[in-house]
Image (cartoon, rainbow, N blue to C red; front, side, top):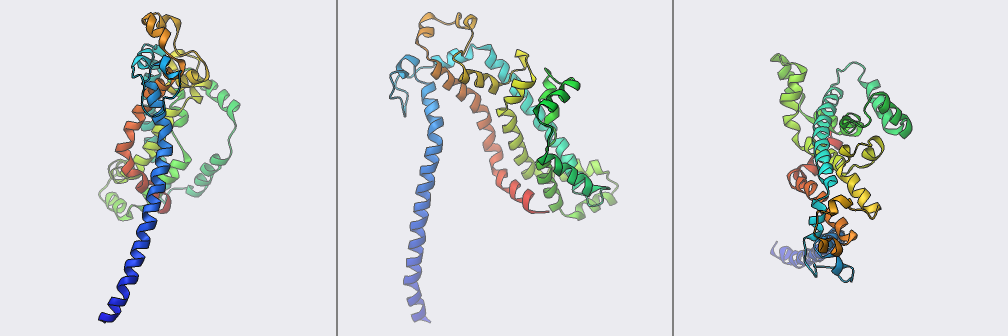
Amino acid sequence: MKRMIKKGNPAGEKHLGKNNTWDYLIIAVMVLFTLVCLYPFWYVVVGSFNSGSDYLRGGVLFWPRDFSLENYEVVMVDSRLWIGFRVTIARTIVTTVCHLFFTSMVAYAMSRDDLPGRTPIYWYCMLTMFFGGGLIPFYLLLKALGLLNTFWVYVIPNMFSVYNMIIISNYFRSIASEIHESAVMDGASEFTIFSRLYLPLSKPVLATVTLWVGVGQWNSFFDSMVYTTDRNLQTLQLFLYKMIKTSEFTSKAEMGGLPADLVSSISTTNVRYATIVVSTIPILCLYPFLQRFLAKGIMLGSLKG
């Protein structure tokens, strides 16, 4: 036995060393990949804190050469930024809450095997994932419903997602059926079972869907561009889109409130960088709170049925 152990040790140590080599190689590749992904955003941050006149000389790559907050000063005086922030925060919160509640209710119903007509309803929902009327019919529908140029054009069309319903429904089906049976025996209604038992037990998948919907609503600009013309309904991302596509970053009236030397020294590119940073920070703050639920929610919601 001792001979066998002695014979086995060198091979085991060699095999362990080989694994460590591959681990180090994988870690090095992943670190390099992470740096490649992060550098563009870091480059934007560096440009936003560099004075515009100095930035035009080039060579600002890793750290601000002439540190300045003038770009953020210009961005902060633009009233369209604050309108966009207000609208985007409101639509993100309201739409995410409504989407979670409505989609979860449908998912709970679809998770019950005793739902009358469950199979036809399920396939009807699946059909809408692959076929749609298109942009023009959808625009005419919103017009007929009186949703154009209203805040609810952001909320009502986004209250339900078939894909998210399937994810949440599969998660509900993974919950032990005895919980539902015990609640029914105690006289609880279906809505009580859904709101007081199933929702609290489904935090991982709900947090995952919250992250998906919240990020989608925060980054959305197309619906604001197509379905609204009111300046007070302009989202933050539409404001950012207009800044990137055009050279105009603030109105002349708002520029008049700034010192003349500041107006002459700023650069359109650096102001755009500052706007990107300002619009990105809030959604980045959401990730640390929901990231730990992400992988667990996706796996359980997609694999268990």
